[in-house]
Length: 263
Image (cartoon, rainbow, N blue to C red; front, side, top):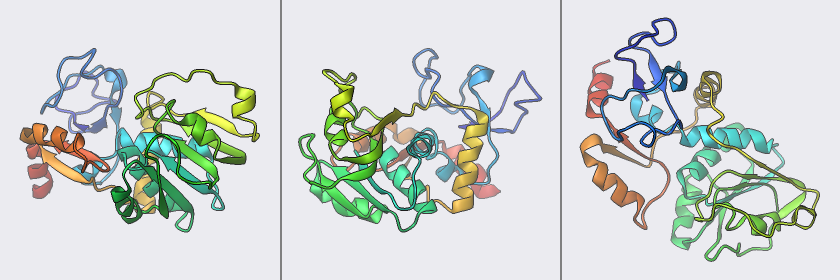
Protein backbone atom coordinates (compact mmCIF):
# COMPACT_ATOMS: atom_id res chain seq x y z
CA UNK A 1 0.00 0.00 0.00
CA UNK A 2 1.14 3.51 -0.68
CA UNK A 3 0.68 6.53 -2.94
CA UNK A 4 0.81 6.66 -6.73
CA UNK A 5 4.09 8.32 -7.79
CA UNK A 6 3.95 7.55 -11.54
CA UNK A 7 0.96 6.48 -13.63
CA UNK A 8 -0.25 5.69 -17.12
CA UNK A 9 -3.91 5.95 -16.08
CA UNK A 10 -4.64 9.43 -14.77
CA UNK A 11 -8.36 8.71 -14.46
CA UNK A 12 -8.22 5.62 -12.25
CA UNK A 13 -4.78 6.11 -10.69
CA UNK A 14 -3.96 9.83 -10.51
CA UNK A 15 -0.74 10.98 -8.87
CA UNK A 16 -1.06 11.12 -5.09
CA UNK A 17 -3.92 8.58 -4.97
CA UNK A 18 -3.78 6.21 -1.98
CA UNK A 19 -3.77 2.62 -3.23
CA UNK A 20 -3.65 -0.98 -2.05
CA UNK A 21 -2.49 -4.12 -3.82
CA UNK A 22 -2.93 -7.59 -2.36
CA UNK A 23 -2.29 -11.08 -3.72
CA UNK A 24 -1.25 -11.04 -7.39
CA UNK A 25 2.00 -13.02 -6.92
CA UNK A 26 3.99 -10.05 -5.61
CA UNK A 27 7.53 -11.21 -4.86
CA UNK A 28 6.95 -14.25 -7.08
CA UNK A 29 5.76 -13.24 -10.54
CA UNK A 30 7.12 -9.73 -9.88
CA UNK A 31 10.65 -9.13 -8.60
CA UNK A 32 11.21 -7.46 -5.28
CA UNK A 33 10.03 -7.55 -1.71
CA UNK A 34 10.40 -4.78 0.85
CA UNK A 35 10.98 -1.53 -1.05
CA UNK A 36 10.13 2.17 -1.16
CA UNK A 37 8.80 1.86 -4.73
CA UNK A 38 7.03 -0.97 -6.56
CA UNK A 39 5.79 -1.40 -10.13
CA UNK A 40 2.59 -3.43 -10.59
CA UNK A 41 -0.06 -4.02 -13.27
CA UNK A 42 -2.90 -1.50 -13.06
CA UNK A 43 -5.55 -4.20 -12.73
CA UNK A 44 -4.22 -5.27 -9.33
CA UNK A 45 -3.94 -1.77 -7.88
CA UNK A 46 -7.03 -0.57 -6.00
CA UNK A 47 -7.70 3.10 -5.12
CA UNK A 48 -8.81 3.55 -1.51
CA UNK A 49 -10.50 6.37 0.37
CA UNK A 50 -9.59 6.69 4.02
CA UNK A 51 -8.06 9.10 6.53
CA UNK A 52 -6.51 6.38 8.69
CA UNK A 53 -2.82 7.01 9.53
CA UNK A 54 -0.24 4.89 7.69
CA UNK A 55 0.76 2.77 10.68
CA UNK A 56 -2.87 1.65 11.07
CA UNK A 57 -3.58 1.50 7.36
CA UNK A 58 -0.59 -0.78 6.77
CA UNK A 59 -2.01 -3.30 9.24
CA UNK A 60 -5.24 -3.78 7.30
CA UNK A 61 -4.53 -5.59 4.00
CA UNK A 62 -4.49 -8.39 3.62
CA UNK A 63 -4.99 -9.46 7.24
CA UNK A 64 -8.17 -7.53 7.97
CA UNK A 65 -9.45 -8.10 4.43
CA UNK A 66 -9.19 -11.87 4.94
CA UNK A 67 -10.81 -11.63 8.38
CA UNK A 68 -13.62 -9.42 7.05
CA UNK A 69 -14.41 -11.76 4.15
CA UNK A 70 -14.46 -14.72 6.53
CA UNK A 71 -16.73 -12.86 8.95
CA UNK A 72 -19.22 -12.12 6.17
CA UNK A 73 -19.21 -15.72 4.96
CA UNK A 74 -19.89 -16.98 8.50
CA UNK A 75 -23.10 -14.89 8.61
CA UNK A 76 -22.66 -14.09 12.26
CA UNK A 77 -25.58 -13.24 14.52
CA UNK A 78 -25.50 -11.62 17.95
CA UNK A 79 -26.61 -14.86 19.63
CA UNK A 80 -23.75 -16.94 18.18
CA UNK A 81 -20.96 -18.54 20.16
CA UNK A 82 -17.82 -18.44 18.04
CA UNK A 83 -14.46 -20.21 17.99
CA UNK A 84 -11.35 -18.99 16.18
CA UNK A 85 -8.94 -21.85 15.56
CA UNK A 86 -5.42 -20.41 15.43
CA UNK A 87 -6.51 -17.24 17.20
CA UNK A 88 -3.08 -15.77 17.98
CA UNK A 89 -2.41 -15.17 14.28
CA UNK A 90 -2.85 -11.75 12.72
CA UNK A 91 -6.06 -12.83 10.99
CA UNK A 92 -7.41 -14.36 14.20
CA UNK A 93 -6.90 -11.19 16.23
CA UNK A 94 -8.26 -9.01 13.39
CA UNK A 95 -11.37 -11.21 13.13
CA UNK A 96 -12.11 -10.84 16.86
CA UNK A 97 -11.80 -7.06 16.66
CA UNK A 98 -14.08 -6.83 13.62
CA UNK A 99 -16.73 -9.08 15.17
CA UNK A 100 -16.64 -7.37 18.58
CA UNK A 101 -17.02 -3.97 16.93
CA UNK A 102 -20.44 -5.01 15.64
CA UNK A 103 -21.44 -7.43 18.41
CA UNK A 104 -19.73 -6.22 21.62
CA UNK A 105 -21.41 -8.83 23.86
CA UNK A 106 -20.87 -11.85 21.63
CA UNK A 107 -19.05 -14.89 23.03
CA UNK A 108 -15.89 -15.55 21.03
CA UNK A 109 -13.24 -18.08 22.03
CA UNK A 110 -9.73 -18.44 20.64
CA UNK A 111 -7.60 -21.56 20.47
CA UNK A 112 -3.85 -21.50 21.14
CA UNK A 113 -1.11 -24.11 21.42
CA UNK A 114 0.51 -22.13 24.23
CA UNK A 115 -1.53 -21.40 27.36
CA UNK A 116 0.73 -18.43 28.18
CA UNK A 117 -0.77 -16.60 25.18
CA UNK A 118 -4.29 -17.05 26.55
CA UNK A 119 -4.26 -13.82 28.55
CA UNK A 120 -3.09 -11.90 25.49
CA UNK A 121 -6.08 -13.28 23.59
CA UNK A 122 -8.42 -11.97 26.26
CA UNK A 123 -6.67 -8.59 26.14
CA UNK A 124 -7.27 -8.61 22.36
CA UNK A 125 -11.03 -9.02 22.87
CA UNK A 126 -11.62 -12.76 23.12
CA UNK A 127 -14.04 -13.95 25.81
CA UNK A 128 -11.76 -16.84 26.73
CA UNK A 129 -9.24 -19.25 25.26
CA UNK A 130 -9.02 -23.00 24.68
CA UNK A 131 -5.77 -24.92 24.65
CA UNK A 132 -5.03 -26.72 21.40
CA UNK A 133 -1.62 -28.36 21.91
CA UNK A 134 -1.83 -31.28 19.47
CA UNK A 135 -4.55 -30.43 17.00
CA UNK A 136 -7.30 -31.60 19.37
CA UNK A 137 -9.26 -28.96 21.26
CA UNK A 138 -9.06 -29.44 25.02
CA UNK A 139 -12.81 -28.89 25.54
CA UNK A 140 -16.22 -30.46 25.05
CA UNK A 141 -17.66 -27.05 24.17
CA UNK A 142 -19.55 -26.59 20.89
CA UNK A 143 -19.99 -23.51 18.73
CA UNK A 144 -22.37 -21.93 16.24
CA UNK A 145 -19.59 -20.56 14.04
CA UNK A 146 -15.94 -21.57 13.71
CA UNK A 147 -13.21 -19.70 11.86
CA UNK A 148 -10.67 -22.39 10.94
CA UNK A 149 -7.23 -20.85 10.42
CA UNK A 150 -5.12 -23.97 10.99
CA UNK A 151 -6.76 -25.70 8.05
CA UNK A 152 -6.80 -29.34 6.91
CA UNK A 153 -4.66 -30.42 9.88
CA UNK A 154 -7.51 -29.67 12.34
CA UNK A 155 -10.68 -29.15 10.32
CA UNK A 156 -12.19 -32.54 11.19
CA UNK A 157 -11.77 -31.80 14.88
CA UNK A 158 -13.36 -28.38 14.36
CA UNK A 159 -16.35 -29.98 12.65
CA UNK A 160 -16.82 -32.24 15.66
CA UNK A 161 -17.34 -29.08 17.77
CA UNK A 162 -19.94 -27.42 15.54
CA UNK A 163 -23.56 -27.16 16.61
CA UNK A 164 -26.63 -28.12 14.62
CA UNK A 165 -26.84 -25.88 11.57
CA UNK A 166 -23.51 -24.20 12.37
CA UNK A 167 -20.92 -22.92 9.90
CA UNK A 168 -17.18 -23.58 9.64
CA UNK A 169 -15.16 -21.19 7.47
CA UNK A 170 -11.80 -22.71 6.50
CA UNK A 171 -9.61 -19.73 5.64
CA UNK A 172 -6.06 -20.45 6.83
CA UNK A 173 -3.54 -23.26 6.54
CA UNK A 174 -1.30 -22.54 9.50
CA UNK A 175 -1.02 -26.26 10.29
CA UNK A 176 1.29 -26.85 7.34
CA UNK A 177 -1.10 -29.28 5.69
CA UNK A 178 -2.54 -28.21 2.35
CA UNK A 179 -5.09 -30.91 1.51
CA UNK A 180 -7.87 -32.71 3.36
CA UNK A 181 -7.65 -36.49 3.04
CA UNK A 182 -10.16 -39.23 3.86
CA UNK A 183 -13.02 -36.77 4.11
CA UNK A 184 -16.52 -38.24 4.13
CA UNK A 185 -18.90 -35.25 3.80
CA UNK A 186 -21.92 -37.22 4.97
CA UNK A 187 -20.25 -38.18 8.23
CA UNK A 188 -18.16 -35.06 8.84
CA UNK A 189 -21.13 -32.73 8.24
CA UNK A 190 -23.59 -34.94 10.11
CA UNK A 191 -24.72 -32.08 12.40
CA UNK A 192 -26.44 -30.49 9.38
CA UNK A 193 -23.52 -28.07 9.42
CA UNK A 194 -22.06 -26.00 6.60
CA UNK A 195 -18.48 -25.71 5.34
CA UNK A 196 -17.34 -22.60 3.49
CA UNK A 197 -14.12 -20.68 2.89
CA UNK A 198 -12.70 -17.29 1.99
CA UNK A 199 -9.69 -16.51 -0.18
CA UNK A 200 -8.28 -12.99 -0.37
CA UNK A 201 -7.84 -13.27 -4.14
CA UNK A 202 -11.55 -12.42 -4.23
CA UNK A 203 -10.70 -8.72 -4.12
CA UNK A 204 -11.93 -5.48 -5.64
CA UNK A 205 -11.71 -1.79 -4.87
CA UNK A 206 -15.33 -1.79 -3.77
CA UNK A 207 -14.73 -4.59 -1.25
CA UNK A 208 -11.58 -2.96 0.11
CA UNK A 209 -13.36 0.35 0.60
CA UNK A 210 -16.29 -1.46 2.24
CA UNK A 211 -13.82 -2.85 4.79
CA UNK A 212 -12.23 0.55 5.39
CA UNK A 213 -15.64 2.17 5.86
CA UNK A 214 -16.60 -0.56 8.36
CA UNK A 215 -13.38 0.00 10.34
CA UNK A 216 -13.88 3.76 10.49
CA UNK A 217 -17.62 3.59 11.19
CA UNK A 218 -17.29 0.99 13.97
CA UNK A 219 -14.09 2.45 15.42
CA UNK A 220 -12.18 -0.82 15.08
CA UNK A 221 -8.78 -0.62 16.79
CA UNK A 222 -6.48 -1.75 13.98
CA UNK A 223 -3.13 -0.82 15.52
CA UNK A 224 -0.54 -3.52 14.80
CA UNK A 225 1.11 -5.50 17.57
CA UNK A 226 4.58 -4.40 16.43
CA UNK A 227 5.89 -1.76 14.01
CA UNK A 228 9.33 -2.09 12.41
CA UNK A 229 11.04 0.36 10.06
CA UNK A 230 12.19 -0.68 6.59
CA UNK A 231 15.79 -1.16 7.74
CA UNK A 232 14.57 -3.49 10.52
CA UNK A 233 13.20 -6.24 8.26
CA UNK A 234 15.49 -8.86 9.84
CA UNK A 235 14.21 -8.03 13.33
CA UNK A 236 10.62 -8.20 12.08
CA UNK A 237 11.11 -11.73 10.76
CA UNK A 238 12.94 -12.78 13.92
CA UNK A 239 9.95 -11.64 15.98
CA UNK A 240 7.47 -13.46 13.70
CA UNK A 241 9.43 -16.70 14.06
CA UNK A 242 9.85 -16.38 17.83
CA UNK A 243 7.63 -17.74 20.57
CA UNK A 244 6.62 -14.15 21.36
CA UNK A 245 4.93 -13.67 17.98
CA UNK A 246 1.34 -12.46 18.34
CA UNK A 247 -1.07 -10.56 16.12
CA UNK A 248 -0.15 -8.31 13.19
CA UNK A 249 3.36 -7.04 12.47
CA UNK A 250 4.11 -4.36 9.88
CA UNK A 251 7.20 -2.91 8.24
CA UNK A 252 6.87 0.82 7.60
CA UNK A 253 8.77 3.07 5.19
CA UNK A 254 10.34 5.85 7.33
CA UNK A 255 9.42 8.42 4.67
CA UNK A 256 5.74 7.60 5.25
CA UNK A 257 6.15 8.38 8.95
CA UNK A 258 7.74 11.70 8.07
CA UNK A 259 4.98 12.62 5.63
CA UNK A 260 2.33 11.70 8.19
CA UNK A 261 3.98 13.78 10.90
CA UNK A 262 4.11 16.77 8.60
CA UNK A 263 0.41 16.66 7.65
